[in-house]
Every structure is written in structure tokens, then in C-alpha cells.
Image (cartoon, rainbow, N blue to C red; front, top):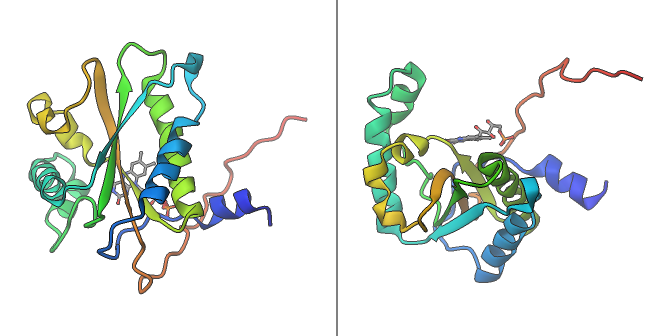
Length: 184
Ligand SMILES: Cc1cc2nc3c(=O)[nH]c(=O)nc-3n(C[C@H](O)[C@H](O)[C@H](O)COP(=O)(O)O)c2cc1C
């Protein structure tokens, strides 16, 4: 199979990581892939904050889980209550992806950049997991100072990166049927 198609097929969300940090050359390949995503109006409206400081990752995890525990959604409260749950699954690298507020489609640009980064990670043997639950914390503007974002940017998502723990088998969830219509 074509290597790009194989990479797309093989990528899975990784939720258990080995403790070692990813190599700088892998991190740079992932960031470059993000920066080469398509963007509306070619705004390239993303900003990437690479966090490799364990204390900050633990703090972001702890604060987000505390907010998740107050969620009106039962499944979110249940996740927050899970024994040993860490928002980033103890991944050694997390990239916060923020969008420029006055761009045409910052959220969509950021999503395109994230998907490129997930695929680049898979291509270089790094595991990853897109993180949306951190939006509980991102909704609290007073909690954003530790991220040191440039002004005019809003954080949308985070992505965890690290070497996958090989003891955990990764299976693709079954694909839904009936998602394609043809007019031809
Ligand atoms: C917008 C978005 C937000 C997500 N947020 C989380 C999250 O907070 N925590 C998590 O473990 N996985 C998260 N995921 C990963 C999905 O659960 C995962 O992609 C899905 O279950 C399919 O599995 P796969 O990535 O292995 O194909 C998120 C994915 C997307 C696209």
C-alpha cells in the first residue's frame, strides 16, 4: 500500500506512553507537518506551544480534571473520577494549538494542522492523542497565563506525543457504515 495511505490507516490514539522524551528531530518534523497544513485564506492562523515541563503538564491535567468533575455530562464526570487518570496519559510532550482570533477560520486551520501532526508522528514512530477535554480549562481565561500565548490567540486543543507503550494493543474502532453517497 502507498506509504501515506498506510500511515493514515495505522495511526491510532495512544493512551499509554513510555516515559522517555521524543527526539528533537521527531518533534521538529511534527511541527513542520503542522505548519504545512492547508489554511483558509492561507492565514496559517495556528500557534504551537510545545510543553515538555512535567510539572506544568501535571498542573494542567489536575486543573482540567477538577473542572471535568463539575461537568453536567455524566461521561465526563466518570472520566474525571477514573483511578490514575491523567489528561495527557503522562505523555512527555504536549503541543497546545491556538488560533489567531481575527483569521478567517482559525478553528478549522488548527484542526487541519493537528491532523497533519498526528500523521507525521505516526510516520516517525511517535504516538499521539488529540485532546479536546482540555477545553474545560481553556474556557477559564484566568487559567491561561502559564501558556504565555501571544495576544490575539485562543487555545483550541492540545495533542499528546510520546513513544507508545508496546504492551498496549491498538485497534481501530469499527468504521460507521452509510457515510458515503454517490451522485454520478
Ligand atoms: C476533536 C477531538 C477531541 C478529542 N479529545 C480527546 C480527549 O480529550 N481525550 C482522548 O483520550 N481522546 C480524544 N480524542 C481522540 C478520539 O477519542 C479518537 O480519535 C477516537 O476514539 C478514534 O480513535 P483513533 O484516533 O484511534 O482512530 C479526540 C479526538 C478529536 C478529533
